[in-house]
Amino acid sequence: MAAIAPLSLLRNCAASTARTFVSVKPACIVSSTTLFPLPHLSRRLQFHARATNNEEAAARAAAVNADSGAPTIFDKIIAKEIPSSIVYEDEKVLAFRDINPEAPVHVLIIPKFRDGLTQLGKAEARHGEILGQLLYAAKMVAEKEGILDGFRVVINNGPEACQSVYHLHLHVLGGRQMKWPPG
Ligand code: AMP
Image (cartoon, rainbow, N blue to C red):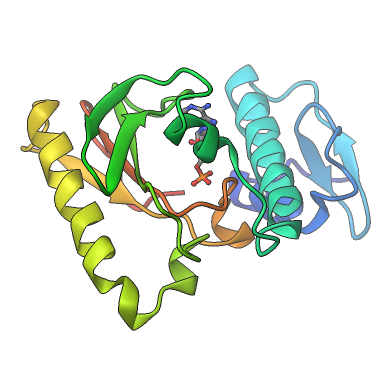
């Protein structure tokens, strides 16, 4: 008889099957080839497994066009074609609140000119200045938001890190006790 998969296994199973099982709900047990619903798992665990599955599937889908040079949702935000809650802005950098916050403070910081920086992994020596400006902007945002005593800066790079928008961005997170290690 199959046993309930621990969360770590659920994560792995979601990662390895995200493309073919994006609609599998709720959480699952793992056999060698497939996933089965586990309706008796706690709602929290089911939610976590579903969210993990969706994020990973979305990240893999986004990665397909990563190097196409196509505009992203962030270009629309920079152009003010869609609304955003701007926290900080200067000539080179824009910081705005994440639409799906993972903490009381969750701000994204982006270069206004992408210049090939779809992700940190594409950085070249010539990007050194803007990378420094982004990091300094993270400190300024943390100060402005009153979270200098504890904040985290995250860059998700590529599908295995669940990057979903291919315009380099720093997540600045804070306003609650952060946990370690991150998921
Ligand atoms: P990542 O998964 O690291 O690529 O992060 C992309 C982030 O962009 C996610 O946290 C999304 O919630 C956020 N996001 C996507 N669309 C918007 C939007 N229109 N306004 C603000 N944040 C957004």
